[in-house]
Image 1 (tube, rainbow, N blue to C red):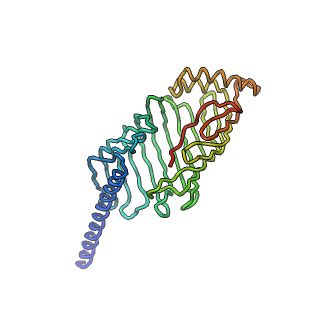
Image 2: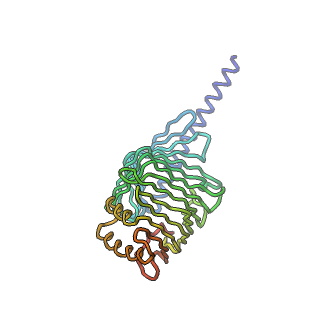
Image 3: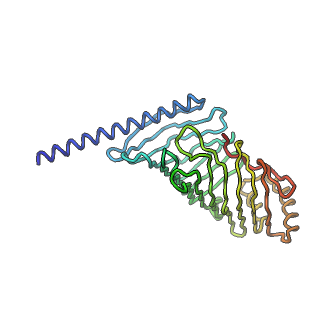
Length: 311
């Protein structure tokens, strides 16, 4: 019995030492990552990093987090973010986000509020991205450009196979302040290299949209197509769109603050003409052509598509 007690005590001491080494390594890696970003010209800082979770987990809380790229066009500010993993598993991480945070994309700052926003990251070979799953009971983003209200959000990005450049993307959510709209997306993304934790950021080369659908109680729009992405983030390719009761979709976009009313009035006249030419005023069945970010309906340029992050 005495020998058993000694063995148990020795194992406890060894495990405690192992956990302490893992916790210290996490602190060092975090500090090193922020130092690397600062050396590249980023604003990267936090006020405190605490590690807990003994004996089986390494649970870290980073407080007053600020990340911003050198131009300041992309930034993230959060009062805290929590990272959880098992002490013996270096490939699976769980992230928990605060109810309020600020995100800046392309120079536009959004106030983001959420409930139950969580993410799960699993690394593959060579620290490539194996899978990234996110969920939220509720997610709202408000900016000068408009408002986004999502609930029951599920978003998954999974490698087709370990180390692959191809990833399956699926998104499902309820949309709108009354959560009376359904949003879904199934697509395959092809990167120039497997995305992961390496220094070089992977760039999306191709987006194959199997089906994107947005459904209101009395209207629906479906989209499919394949798009290529150049090194400046511009989209090229063909997209098929089927919109049933497209006027209701346009009115809803105005009511939700996603498009200006003046723009909607102009678009309604143009789309109404196209629908009548196609033989149905209520249904819009068209193909759009994208060339280096410019959007065309037949020979007519009708706008510019958003750019993806470039190299």
